[in-house]
Length: 306
Image (cartoon, rainbow, N blue to C red; front, side, top):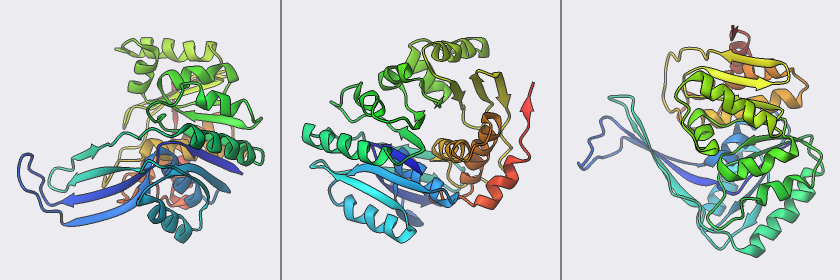
């Protein structure tokens, strides 16, 4: 079983405009709602890949029941820790005329100490039955940077981390199997610019030296880099033929990689599947609604570059 856990889910509004004009009154041609944020996207993507996945997250306010109904309809196994603070609302604005995507992000509200304790206890129970754990998303304001590290010390599962900043650095001593920041998040985490590939690879090796077994860095549609015990690798994602909504591609990458690793695939093959899952997310309106057969077909076409 793969456990997807995090503290910053979102209730996502997706608005589609024939043409979006900044500073003007804009009327949407379509409006959709769904559970999102990194942890929920990872769980939904794993579910569509036919993985045995369990979701652990916080939920509060009006979004609690709406997200639970959605997960129930999808047939997703889940455990929610109720919070006094309402789950944040984020909005995606899609401009059909230009293809531009604008994301309006509400930060996650603070979680009460008792709620964090409930989450910790739930994690210990859920992680005990997991072969792989994906910890993903930002920490809500006021949550100690060591929170995820203290959780992960309580399990022997493989760790895949889609984190950034101090919370990622605190986890490295636990020797996670994979850490997966994007290039901007990696620069922010190490506190210095990554103006070229040499600097980026050095930053990746710095994380290896501090404990990460594999460091995988994405950069949107650009090259994916990996550094681990087998060496350094670069992969070119496929050119997208049709882009509808790119939000959640990084989460789908993490889900595809976790699914492959949990199935015993070698890391290079797992990265291929992660890239394919991210690419498969591009033409979908709602995030993480993947087609497993197409992901596997696309993964076989991805080649590692010298």
